[in-house]
Length: 117
Image (tube, rainbow, N blue to C red; front, side, top):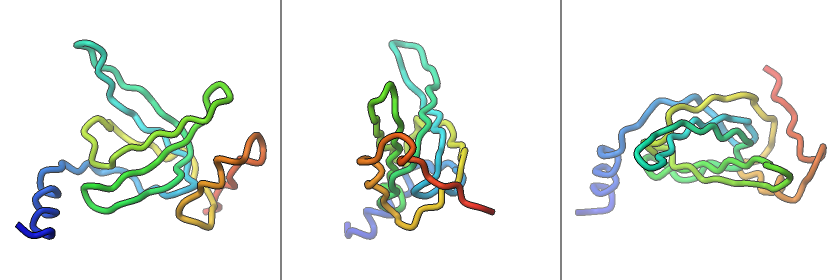
């Protein structure tokens, strides 16, 4: 089994949901399913997209938010069955695909301009 055959096999296994287009700099809300014991609930994770990496079934995206003055980053696989839906709250105007410089900025400096339509 070659590498391309393996990738096609993985693609066919991953059930791909349709999500809106988003990229680095956008503020999104990820509705994520969490299992606690035998109960299931949906938790919202709202933050700025730092990057999207990979392609196809192995694509991931990193979301960063500030909680109680502490930066929290979470990496989500785009093909995850636990992602219920993704809402794009704001489109950000940034010039690069990976905005890691945001980690060093605090307060008002960490704001991202909104893209004008």
